[in-house]
Image (cartoon, rainbow, N blue to C red; front, side, top):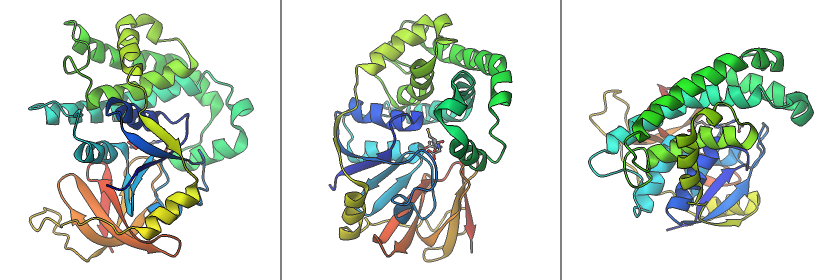
Length: 304
Ligand SMILES: N[C@@H](CCC(=O)N[C@@H](CS)C(=O)NCC(=O)O)C(=O)O
């Protein structure tokens, strides 16, 4: 298998979800450091416009969104598995609940307590306004802290309830996909502030168990090297499910857009469609032909 390349930056909590999974699997991987705001000139030739962090590259296959990145990692490196046997759907559903419900309030808790102006400045504010589709206003964020803290606390209490029978991880004795997902917001809160985790010692103890997983065997490469790797590689085979309810057919031109933040459409030719993923082929002078893969849930596919 070609090397796993993760395009990410250190402070990204969604990237941490993947890094901790790479730790769980003791995987060797290559790291490309990307900017935390647009423009991302060395990422765009690979993704065709998808701008979120992280992105995983394996040769000329580009995986967008951690929902799919984690499934693909697990497919390629099956041991130890991220999906507990017989409870695969449960692990994935809990993960979506965490990604879509806990992450937002957790970001609110962190962002409302750090000196945004001093640390990030205007470029970041402008970028995050575009990214989220609404004005990124530090004052509003600060005012929302009590609500965000309480929501984070209430949602983490559901995770606590899962651990209340003394199990070590969310779905049992071993860490799984759902634990990696919960580690994302918990790690982010811990990097900046105490509340509300000071009221959830069992989550803190769980996060310490997670931390020991590490992040695998990482080596840094330059963005240009990753682009060269894509150019030299051919994308893997994919198939379009003829019974898909969308009625989409192989070879059709489509665009694919996240339905929440960073809503930049990526255009390409449909080459893969399953219940879990949509794959489009596109071409760029810098990298040649690549296939960009997205999850189905949370992504809008429009025929052109
Ligand atoms: N649903 C996406 C969410 C990714 C996401 O929101 N990542 C944040 C960083 S943690 C981001 O892209 N921020 C803007 C940026 O990095 O440009 C996933 O699971 O990968």
